[in-house]
Amino acid sequence: MTDQELEATAHALVADGKGILAADESNRTIARRLAAIGVESTRELRGAWRELLVTAPSAAEAISGVILYDETFRQHTDGGLRFPEATERAGIIPGIKVDTGAKALAGAPGEKVTEGLDGLRERLADYREHGARFAKWRAVIAIGEGRPTRCCIAANAHALARYAALCQEQGLVPIVEPEVLMDGHHTIERCERVTAEVLRRVFDELREQEVALEGMLLKANMVLAGADCPIQAAVEEVAEATLRCLRGVVPAAVPGIVFLSGGQDEEVATAHLDAMNRLGEQPWELSFSFGRALQAAALAAWRGEEANREAAQGALLHRARCNGAARRGEYSVGLEREAVVA
Image: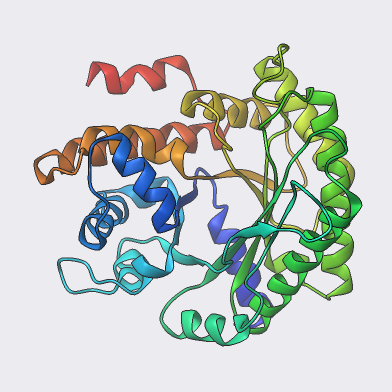
């Protein structure tokens, strides 16, 4: 892709009323989710589940792109199409997760750095050749006593920037994801400070590596109190704190910010996104890149049974429509309850 094509793809991924479906869970993670509904994790069932997601009728009305896991990317649908091709035919842009996971960071007990840079140029070229148009790399930053350290932030920011530069070299839009985890007892104020510090270092590194900001997307955490903090912020406070943080550090050249749900309840994540979009125009599009917050209800409806396919797709489409409305600041309790009435 040229710089103009990268920019066009980035804008298409945050098109009005649309967001990204993250279906890139590792086999280990998806196995846990399947076990929770009493389903064995096999290659065939994992493929069937993800085919159900990407072939849901009219999904493209609210889903712009889907992030796939390597196994799924190389599988075929029941109709004989490779997943990237099936996704394209559905009007959804195919993407790929390319990091190899977070590993213990030497010299920083309790902290992690995401790996996967070795051989990445060649892997990206292969993914691009076989249909991927964007990629994702996730770093994880924990808040705790003495954490995060400058070492942890620096190591992850540098890896994210190297990944992003390699993506653009190979014609893929990079989604840069430095996730500040919501695990812990920290306050919303501490989360805001840490998120700003992390993002500031990430964008410093992106500039150093000459990444074109116009041809990338930021996947950011919302600014939240830790899950174990006794004081939880109201929806409007989360929206205000998140935007205050982002306006201070994210350049306007970035086309869009796609939020992760990070373990939030699906309706709460949607309400937070809606509240942000009600606060007026921002320098970037505010969208979503949800995994569990889009899939949980559908997975519960499916339970590994082909007979439940339509019900599962209906649950997915409902959540997609709710989040599409939140993209415009038009989400409501009434819209949320439509599925219950149906």
